Amino acid sequence: MTKKLTVEELLAKARKPAKLAMAYHPFYEGKVQVMPKCAIRGPYDFAIWYTPGVAAPCRAIKENPELVFTHTNRWNYVAVVSDGSRVLGLGDIGPEAGLPVMEGKALLFKYLGGVDAFPICLATKDPDDIVTACKWLEPTFGGINLEDIAKPKCFYVLDKAREQLKIPVWHDDQQGTATVILAGLLNALKLTGKKMSEAKITMIGVGSANTRTAIVLMRAGVKAGNIIMVDSKGILHPNRKDIEAEKEENPWKWDFCLKTNAEARTGDAAEALKGAGVCIAASKPGPGTIKKEWITKMATDSIVFACANPIPEIWPWEAKEAGAKIVATGRSDFENQINNSLGFPAIFRGVLDVKAKTVTDDMCIAAGRELAKFAEERGIHEGDIVPRMDEWEVFPREAVACALQSIKEGVARVKLSRQELWDRAVSIIKNVRESTSLLMKEGLIPPPPEEV
Image (cartoon, rainbow, N blue to C red; front, side, top):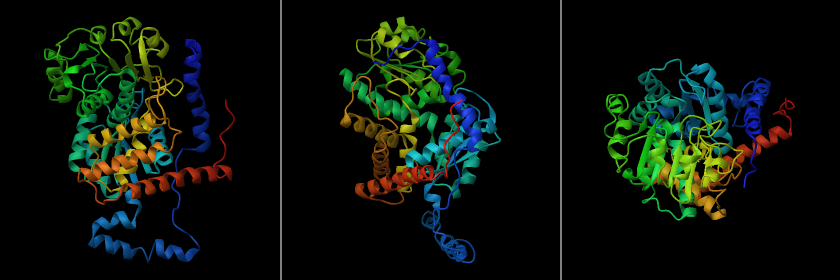
């Protein structure tokens, strides 16, 4: 069991990455860069890669636009698009202040999935402008990752962009979170002897993360009536006039009022948790957002996912003391980390490798199930229900699962066998890891400054 630390020790540990980040970021002047991937043997090669030789592939693409995926790196380009309106737990800090996050996302894309991702921070907060910007970017990219866009416009932007673009569009705060929560829930239910179709789930928070998580869980087999959702004003139900009044702006939330909560409960989060087998929280940081006494009223062998950062809604040891059997958070210093980084690099690796035209919730479900399967095969227990980021083999497996689902749904431009997809993903991901290791070994990526 994780050692019980004092609040002061936990806060000091939580603050340390921020302290190091202020020293490391200016030292490296950013986290990603563009590097050549073709041979450059001498000046003559520029006549092949640029003028006059480059005119030949240009003409070929003009005749057949699909050849852009063969003659250029578009097949591996992803745009990380944000307006900076809801950056991590910082809120609306603007596109410039959001850029370090988007660079970090691009770094994870590359190192974990071998994906060439570019941070694109937009000087607009208008949802239609964001969709239009994505459309303008489409000829260059094989996929779009929407990031840190405030709700409810993030739902609108995702749906409209998916409708209008012929490349995968994904919102990590929605689909990425849903994928990894699904993976963790699948294994947690196995360990507690519960069935997905019978699970009673209370969801604390109805923001972008829990909105898509609810949609994905229902598609994966959870009964809508078995879900109770709670926002800052209480349980969602058909008589929530405040939500009905805003149904044009946020139809997803009103839909939950109509479809979930078959028991027609009313009240607050404490009432919603009574008898629940699972709590999935993606709300405001704690501690104390969820009370110990609320957890004691949950079902036997309950499951608690407290996903707020940097401090979960309830400390893991408090949830355990209150009777929870399995507890997960979003933090790496606690057991069972529910981390989006387990999802988006591999999912994009998969859809890019088959040049898919979209990414669907069913692809997220396929990825989530593969994550759960990987962990189960190497062994799971109450403190270890999902893969860890250092288990790099999970990423090609997840990529293959997502690619095969793309082919099954008929949205893949190319069809490869399971073995071909596996070999390709392993090769690309290993190349990045080994290249980075070599650059560090040779001092071309210098070590960071000493800890401050």
